[in-house]
Length: 344
Ligand code: PMP
Image 1 (cartoon, rainbow, N blue to C red):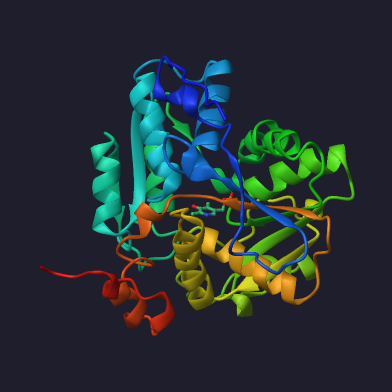
Image 2 (spheres, rainbow, N blue to C red; image 1 turned 90 degrees about the vertical axis):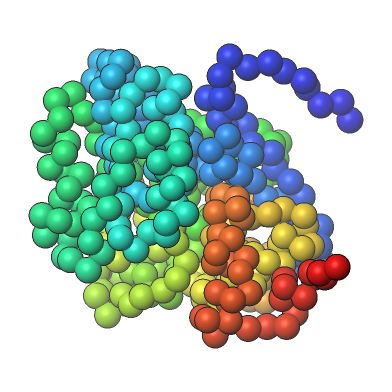
């Protein structure tokens, strides 16, 4: 197979058009054909490049941003990295308000990409003036011409996936997709893709993945916000303790919950069996597929697409650290990494 060798004007031209890769080992013996949309192939190594670019370019189209203006967001994760990368190319300042819980590695990564980082205490309420929400809001009010991305409450998040990821999947599966399985955080990914796919074929089944400790699944079933569902969990980027308006719950057929432990082991398994070095939520999405398979969700001839949102390199001190796994009580000799090393 010949691969195109192209030259690009800048790194932003590489956002989107990520590959769909067949899963061969993880789904051995399952009914149906399984394909992963591997978002780590974006230049910022996650699906968040798509929403950051779309939201920033919409602001430009509306005349809200000019050279040297400031873009603000509350995130230490993938969205922050994407905004920082895009700001470098387009000539904007980037301010990220992050929680003091964020790992030093993540903060260093954002600084390396030129972002101004405000580290805010994690143990204060959301309405405390020191919380990262309030700090971001204050800076947005103070800095003239600044744009606040606000991914959990911004319809353009969903819109980004409706215009890019959705059509790509439809085209890559030649319209044969029967199921989409995707993690839900802001819900932009699953809702945007679902909107596009269901417009093409209302029969496509869309399954969201949620964490134990998050309110999303219960809210989907009851349309009630149940505080009792909320407790701490470890997977970052999946589930939520509030209801994001970037999620369209009517476009999701059902939710599956996955555990921190099984998702972590499954992420390790994907790397070792498929050669795809993916993040924690990719493990969560794949874990959901295992559970759905057990429940008899899939049949022969089905074409199932799963979203792998980001790259494993962001989780070296977590999922890909045996010490971290052991500290969480996740020890399992079958997925150990450290025994692979020999010192000469
Ligand atoms: N996985 C990771 C690693 C993420 O950072 C996010 C975003 N919070 C998601 C999955 C979920 O994507 P979305 O926010 O579009 O629901």
